[in-house]
Structure formats: structure tokens, C-alpha cells
Image (cartoon, rainbow, N blue to C red):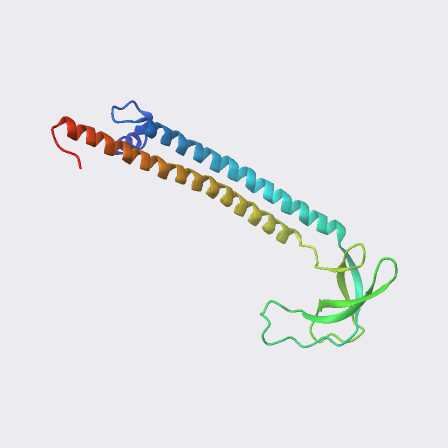
Length: 193
């Protein structure tokens, strides 16, 4: 019985009630619309963001290719300030572009690697050094993260707009109540002010 009563109290704006005002019905429709827009809009925004990130990762994989490079100097030792999982250091390497032009740049290599050691670097079609493309797990993680962030942002924006409208409706409701109490006070012989 208590559960039925709570449901009835929550849905009082939808029932015929002598105390129900037009602003109450507007607020009820606003809340329902905000829920629907937040859910559907968040879902659409999340799926769109995940798709954009997924396409970006696919494009990276298509554009970047592994190239063998050679260290031009001995790689430094691992720094004591480096985090435990970071097992690479920066060193100067030389590689050739697709047209055969030699290039030099900084790339991450194993610590203490000797000059002349070969290593794999990633370049674009022009031979410019690029970061290694994301693997499948990293790509999924980025797509899911972007989707969740976009869905949360879209849903939050809808709820912020609905909350703003509800605040204005509450102010209007309070003004209406003040006016009604003033009229009732005059009818009962009281004074205002």
C-alpha cells in the first residue's frame, strides 16, 4: 500500500486534482521531455562521438607505416624520474622517406641502445615521424571514453536547460501563490501590506 501511495504522490501532476495548476502540468511535461531528450540525445551524441574517434583511429592506421631507423648516437640510460612502466628514452635516429631522402629526428628507443642499432619508427606518407597508431584495445578505450563523455555532456546540457526552466516555473508558481493568498486575505477581511 505504501508503494502505491508513493507512486500516486509522484504522479500527482498527471492526475485530475483541484490543486493542480497549469504550471504543474507544464512542469510534468518538461520533466518527461527532459528525460527523453537526455536519454535519446545522450545516446546519439555518445554513438556519434565513438564513431568519430573510431574513424580517426582507422585513418591513423591507414596513413602511418612502420619504417626501420638507425640510432645516430648512443641512447641515454633510463632516468630515475621516469615512471616504472615507461621503458623507452628519447634518442636521435635516421631513416629514409619513401622517395629515398634521409631524415633525422627524435624517437623513443630502448635505454642504452648503441649507435647504429636498428629500431622501428612510424611515419606518414611523406616520411615525417608520427606516433605509433593505437592498438585495438587502446582504440576501443578511446572510442568508449569519448562516447561516454559526449553522452554525459549532452544529457547534462539537457538537464541543465530543464533545471533552468523549472526554476523559472517555481518562481512563477510562487508569484501565483502570493497573488492568490493576497486575494484570499482581502476576501477574509484582512489587510495587505
